[in-house]
Amino acid sequence: MAEAYLAEPKTPPPLNIPHSDDIVKVSIIDSTTYLSLDISPFLKPIYKGKEHLTCPAFSFLIEHKSGKKILFDLGVRKDWGNLVPSTAKHIKELGWTVKVDKNIAEILTEHGVEPESIESVIWSHHHWDHNGDMTTFPGTTELVVGPGFKGQYLPGYPTNKDAAVLQSDFDNRNVREIDIASEGKGLKIGRFEAYDYFGDGSFYLLHTPGHSVGHICGLARTSTSPPSFVLMGGDACHHGGEFRPSDYLPLPKEIKPSPIAHLSPACPGHLLQQMHREKSATTPFYQLTETFAHDTKVAEWTISGLQEFDASDEVFIVLAHDESLVNFIEFYPKCINDWRKEDYANKARWRFVGDYEEAVADVK
Image (tube, rainbow, N blue to C red; front, side):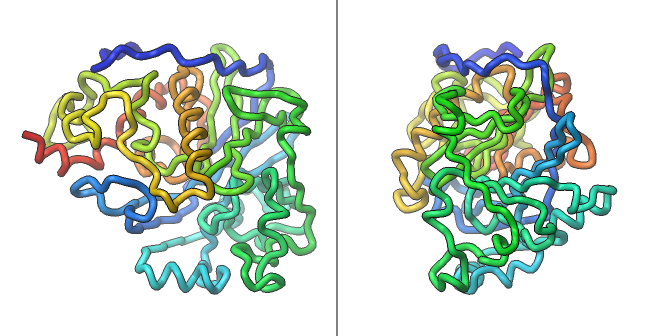
């Protein structure tokens, strides 16, 4: 979809995704998680009316032609009060809202998919709002983690009283750490080291470091003609304003339909530029705070890499906590493979600016 921009877009570098005629079936699972937390420890600046991150936590069911089923992330466990005690205490002390109705295993079972049929669960990283409850899956379900995970986070609590993860999630199951750089045999997609998970080009793991040790994203091929991919973003970003706008996708001159209720039928891009922290049409609305990421500079490098994917008509980025997709896309048991036909990526791209309704209203 051609758009008129407030700045001339730059041409992004090629992603160099290898050709394949194989796809996977991808479903985005609404994990029934709802989170509300103060935004200030994570992102800056604070825009009027957007003082909190209010977000879901998505999981992904990936089904391969071989019949293998895997999951990418699990949201929050239903009994989150039984997280590592220091984590549960921290959540309560900070007054964060955490609501979870169901574990992912329950949601799957309700739709005729038994936990025993899940070959692997992939964690994007170690944080509690992605790990779910692995004990709801049998020991035959392996757990897949990114490079450096085991050395950094195992053993879990209470074996290691200072651990951020529960040892019960790892007990009596295979925990497979993928060294993407070596096992991927030098493959890069965009700027990221990549691993061909099924060996047929249908699903890749990307090493997307910075947010935490071993952070990975998933890249699933959802069609071949034309080619299309869903990028499962994990916590490479948390909000669309972390990587949009960009040099490759500047603010458009207008967004239609308008995500901001009092600006109808179209939201003028120049109003968004005026309320922007740098009055920029090409710089993201947010920066990471200095203490949010494990390595802020590396996390910013990853965010820049995400912008390159975002500029491709072939890629639909789905962040784990993208509230703008709620009540917009179709969730499991529906699959998302037809996203390009539905034009979800273009229609969803600027929906996040609805969070800035009050800030835009103050623009003179």
